Length: 244
Image 1 (cartoon, rainbow, N blue to C red):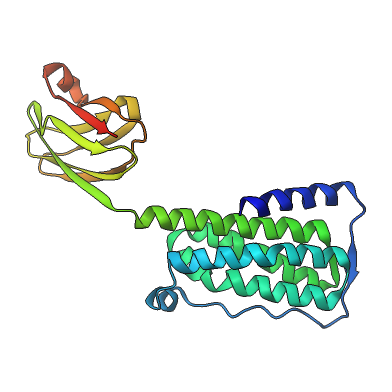
Image 2: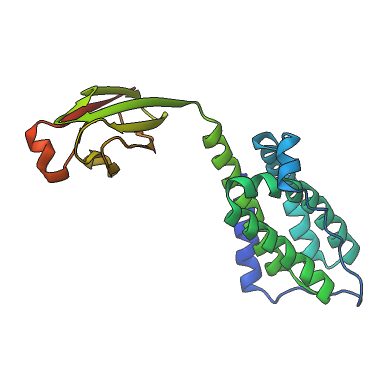
């Protein structure tokens, strides 16, 4: 994918410096889009992270051909290249939308822009390269998001009372996704704050509970505390140990 991004950047720069290549398309002829797959059906059929990874590979192989076809000016070649490219990314828009609707919408808009160029009868190489880059970048971003979502999650519970945390020491692995759950078994509001990491849960009311996700990449020792009404000064502190 890195090779494609480098190549796309060169193409975009060259297009910006050169006179745009414009291809006339006969009126009434448009490139048919691959059918959209409903989100529910796509997820039910297992089109998740693996499908996105396959879409990335296929799109990365088809993208340079599409940009080259736009530069060459052969309408049928552009039509065929776009069909191959669309077949790679459009089937996974549903699963991507389930994870990040805005990202899926951005990719779909880029695909629509290419189809509009063809149906309108004017195709510029730099415009095609720009929209192709948007789609490929979106596929890569989606794959990373799905990979993060599929990572194993460690869950820890911290109980807050007046004026202490239980446990007073937490140990987690660096780089691992951790869901911290705060339960307030005290009589006043409490929070769970790691100032150095800008991480905060709460304040939450007595009897309430809340949780948030935390990933710490750098091993070390981090202090956590409840700073509501100076509770930390009364001893409501603890230590998060992040191990290699």
